[in-house]
Image (cartoon, rainbow, N blue to C red; front, side, top):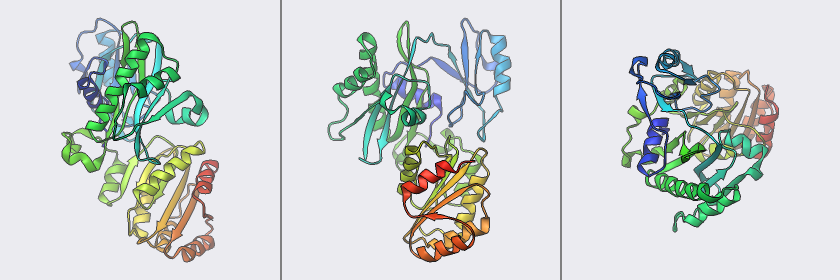
Length: 365
């Protein structure tokens, strides 16, 4: 479950992380008097809000009200803006990144830092991996100050900033652990004349742990029309920020596919898990949902046929006739029959997951 920025910031503040002070509005007239520049931030659970025009600045209340009118009701990647976070504009000297993510290979949480804050971390990892410092955390020991200190020094922090970053990182990890999180990040953490400050907040909670967390999915999560449709079809779908549609059979396989695509410089537009035992109709629904999203330039279908039969999935692909360049990998039950069906219909298949990921990146229109 993806939390809204203000919800994530609330958690960070509870753990002692310095966050930008602000408040939520649903109506432009709720904006308070302004005595310094402010930022109006659309509250939607997708990235790149700034590039979509979802973050605006104002110097006074009159200007803020007019800009709030433009933002409220705006569509950002399929989500309607219903709330704005109003915060004071920070006096930024430098920008950094700190985050905690689950490393799927090791099954451990990984602390990440870089001095290149305020940019897309996936793109940075692809183009300049040497600028990113990582440390896997032993779950039996938990995070230690020296773990964060090692990374802070590695990205070039010194003096007061180094000490403050160590505190922020250890508190962020604690919040991550306590809330069964899959992702907790601050991008960016900025240095100001008064010290480090979190001016953004991202926090995702594992859906399987929602029963023991206080957040109500219906109240706190905004979903796109595609996500609502997928839920109705009993498909696991999450919108992402890239341009390669990913469909797989099994959450682990889909996640591995996302990682493989990222290794070749690509980025997924979605996570779509057909689940076990999927058939022709499920594949038709999956392709329908991906086709609804603008900006998808290629698709990678990675299917393992255990209880899922590859030939039924192949029939769904053939019946739908996707117009987006598509790469298909199939392995398992009725694999050879499925490959022959796809070949006769003009589709190329691959056997290796890495090869498929590379092709999905290459064939983007």
